[in-house]
Image (cartoon, rainbow, N blue to C red; front, side, top):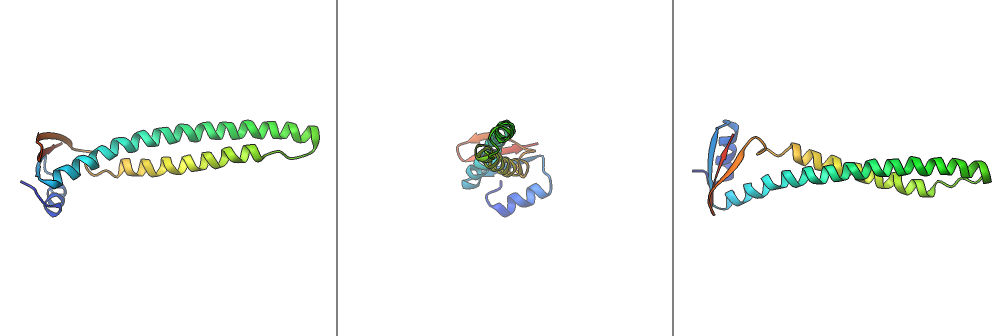
Length: 122
């Protein structure tokens, strides 16, 4: 029965197939495991926003070139807003993907035994 972080680290480094965790550590592991799923959702959403923003940027850039030819005045401020949105969304997506991939519990499934006890199985 594992109750401390050190014991859990040792069990995971030994790649045990089944790990029983008890107490507050069990609640922490459940929260960390759930964070991985949320990170995937955030990453997918941010990638979609980044793709849309890049598309809007290039669309605005095309309109700016037409406006420049017609009036000889550059009008790219609208497009720059979209490039900043796209870069921000790309950064959020990268961070979320790093969190999702770095989740050390991803190879384990949680089986809840009681309110204070869980079992991790490969």
